[in-house]
Image (cartoon, rainbow, N blue to C red):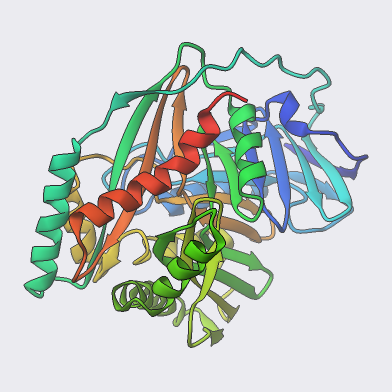
Length: 398
């Protein structure tokens, strides 16, 4: 299989051409069309390794011509993994043609004679999203949170993250480019993605690998944002001094550090979190940087880090087991790693948050909340409602 990368001119709004694989981040933007290779690894703890092996086979038989040699040029794999080992649905795709942008540099990587599309895809008429139910009614989810707090207070674990889904429907099929455009406009600092119709805008960078340099961003502990500046400042101050939220955040930071300590050196973690403010919510945030010692690629690092305490809990095995017992749904690819990797092993993976699984005129949205000692079920339910607003707002007609 021959891959040819060449510089190209600026393309105005690539989303008009309905790319089936998308990654938009502050570092790099990638738009992919078609499938040269598709890898469906099936369930199991080895799913990340199966995807890596599949991509390695592609590269072993590839004839690569890449005059740019930048992160994201040459063959690129888009991948999205399920959260739980027992779930099916993980997928990875090597597109037939990829348009890329890093700063002012634009390029195209094509397989054989594949070319960029030249005709915009017509958008269906927009329609509003209507609530269609969830896997667990609110009262059952509140009971699950109360049970999680009881287990935590009994000393069985320190933290567990419980999520809920929110099914919606529309009279017209949801149009991924419209949704991606809305998300990118509302959350320009987030990682906006589309992989096999999982669409979202995640604020949480699981890992960025650039040669020997590694970066991650830990988010845990949340509060609403407000249009009134004084109310917003009060909420921010309360979040920064909240013992409950600071403890939840510390557990997430520890889980990232423990996952990296065997493969990295010079792990730099600031002693205090800062605030990351988004359109509808603000988080405690801690950036993590390190130097790799074993040459692990971006996908391997994503697999090593997943699941962090930010989406699973602490201790991780106990938290994941409790999630399976009381959460009441299959998360699918929600809260799993999603991102891209190139032939050099460089790439970016986010945690699939603020996302929706699209299926024609149906969609399944997700939101979660970290449960620790002192968590109030009704407050955690409200936190998920606030987080769901990000996707609900993006599904509204223009």
